[in-house]
Image (cartoon, rainbow, N blue to C red; front, side, top):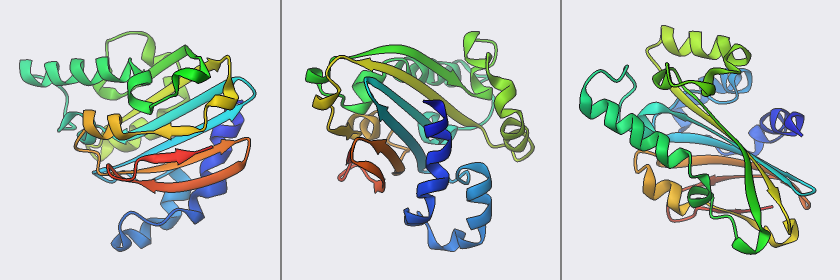
Length: 198
């Protein structure tokens, strides 16, 4: 299943409008790194295969926290804890229909800003080059991966990200790419146009 999510951005990225035309020179980099680090813009990949739904969210930390530096002050640490708590309740963020009966099997959060918190770095070696790039450029990304088992996947018609935009107002746009029973599609989502169908 994971290979679907890995292949998805390469299959759909050319069909996604660029979030900002002045970044056209980053086109090659976007393919190489599954999207450039651009403030206000996040990426979401989702794949529904049988009863399994996988969702990956990648976002610059500033979209979720309001900053990208290490959390040193009590206020910054509180913001990190709050964002983490919201990301650990993904059912609220993705608008999954109750009729689909989707139960969360796995949730994994990765970010240099979550360092020292435990399990989220168990797969850090897979993304070492990404972390090095962000550290070198003082950029920090948050990567969240979720896997659901859905008892009635036919009732899952799509995702509704309005709650995600509300929870993280620093996120202005989400480049969403999905694979589902009706094939592949990509869509640039905003707070007022936050739905994508499978």
